[in-house]
Length: 166
Image 1 (cartoon, helix red, strand yellow):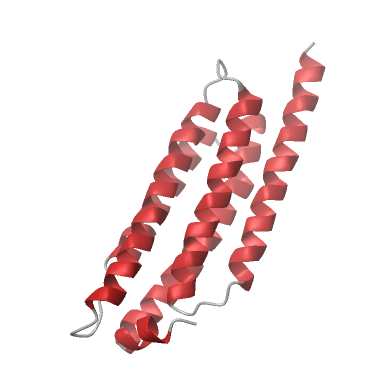
Image 2 (image 1 turned 30 degrees about the vertical axis):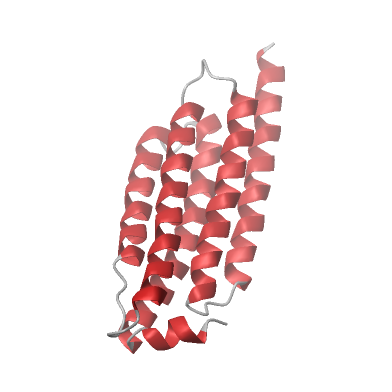
């Protein structure tokens, strides 16, 4: 628990940070649970779907970056901003990798492995922000496990599709 950070934030800012963080991790799960299989099935259109979902997730990361504190809480706010930058960077990296996954000329197994690592790191970054605001990690940990399972499922689907194409 990070009492210094939670007490450094006005109640409304703390509530906003917790709600935004919780919603963001849910968006990560939904985006990858729908977007990754769409790379194989084509439904929904993966490019349109992923672009829109990343736009929304980036907006939530911006909200996390705008959380402000009480006077004299600069150090706590700087820690939150550092974590929010890690979340934004993680989203940007995962978005770049999702673009690679959309390109059939790319090495899909390698791209999927990189995207899985990036998604896991993004969940870790969200969890670290959540730790600063005393957000229960249970949901974030569950999302991380679900996301990794989705990647495993898509990797299996990709192998089946490749075998069928031969």
